[in-house]
Image 1 (cartoon, rainbow, N blue to C red):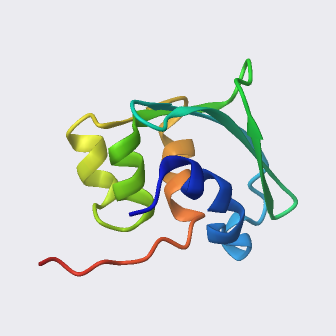
Image 2: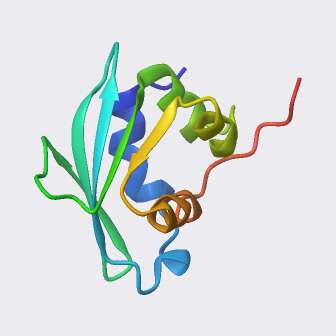
Image 3: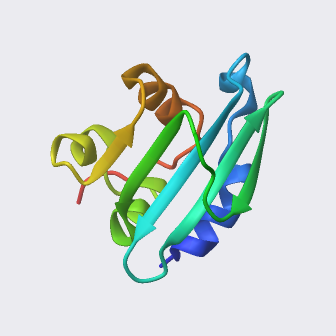
Length: 112
C-alpha cells in the first residue's frame, strides 16, 4: 500500500497538465495522522511542484486524514464521497476544490 509521502512525492507524475491550462494556484495540503504532514503545491504554467511545509495565504487548503488521502489518490474512494462524509475538507472557493479534483490522473478502482 502506498504511503502519504510516496503519493505526495508522486503528485507531479499524477498531474494532468492538459486539464490545468490556465489554472495557476498555490494549494496547501494538511494531512493528519500516520505519515501525514504539511506540503504545498505550486501549479503554474501546466506544471506541478511539491514543497514541504506550510504556505501562508494559500487560495485553497485541503485538510484530510492520511488514510483518506491514500484512498483518494489511489482511486479507492470517490472525492465526492470524502467531501460528503466531511473526510475531505477544502477551505477556499468551492470552484477551486472542484478544479483541484479535475487536475489529477487518479486510477479508477472498480468496486469489489
